[in-house]
Amino acid sequence: MMKNLTYKTMLMEDRINFYLGNYLINTKNIDITIFPKIKTIHNLNLNNIHYDLNLYNLLVSTNHSNKQFFYSSGDIEKYEHGLTLCKNRCKENRSSVILKCLNFNKHWHLYYNKPRDINYNNKIPSIFWRGTTSGRLDRFILILNWFNKDENINIGFSNVSKNKTRFLKYVKGACAANEFLKYKYILSIEGNDKDSGLNWKLNSNSVVLMSAPKVSSWLMETTLIPNYHYVLLKDDFSNLKEKLNWCNDNPDLCEEIINNAHIFMKQFSDIKHENELEKQIINKYFELLYNVNFKCEFLNVNSIPKC
Image (cartoon, rainbow, N blue to C red; front, side, top):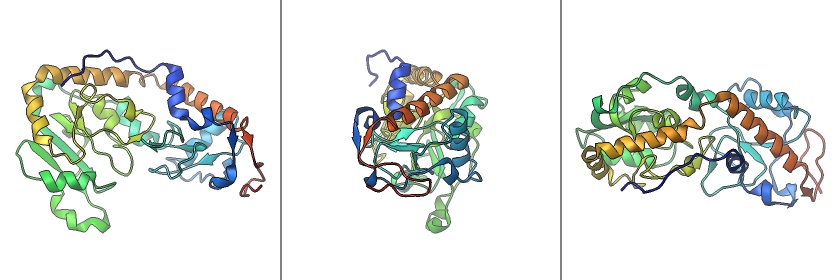
């Protein structure tokens, strides 16, 4: 099951190219009339402390506060073109530009403030997961197929949204990270976009089990290697019991996977370095954005581009 390879964390240039995507880098002529409304720093809602305020601070600190840009706020990157600053992009979209600062605390707080963990060998040999009823069908498929079906598969919703009350019977309550870390095997399941806990899960002394990531953020999820950084599950979780048995039968390989995940996560460990990298991304973004051959001109602050 383990791949015979040596993984090296990505070089700085490779990370820059990953975050920028391939659209701005490779495109020389852009017709911006096909894109959504252009924005300026004045369009940002500074009461939105998780997204807009962080972007505002980044633009000011890099001296780009007078420039126009494209931006998608929130969990799901809505646009398929390569001019949009966003938190994440789907696997098929290698274009939009990923930033770290957007909803930073939700995804990175427990990575930089690591919860108290215990040795892998002292953990409970069961699968554990809690999460909300957000996102695509993945979480519902998991619950419907495995809820209370096996004593060593401990899963449940932490809570339900008001339009999902029919799933109240599957609620087991919210849990802090420390509760997850009692278990050898932790599930990661994407929600509205990425699994917000994946960052600290990969940095823990537990094995992460998940299907192949469909969304990439600053974590670069789609560069993770299955059965090397995590144990690969089928999209419908039909092999969950099989993978549980494999993990219990192969503790040494599980510890290798944990170590590989730690090596992957170490590249994010220097927050000053990560901040500087993000500044390089935003600088390169504006350099490329303002040097392509536009078929239309940028107009005033609140206008839609016109030919």
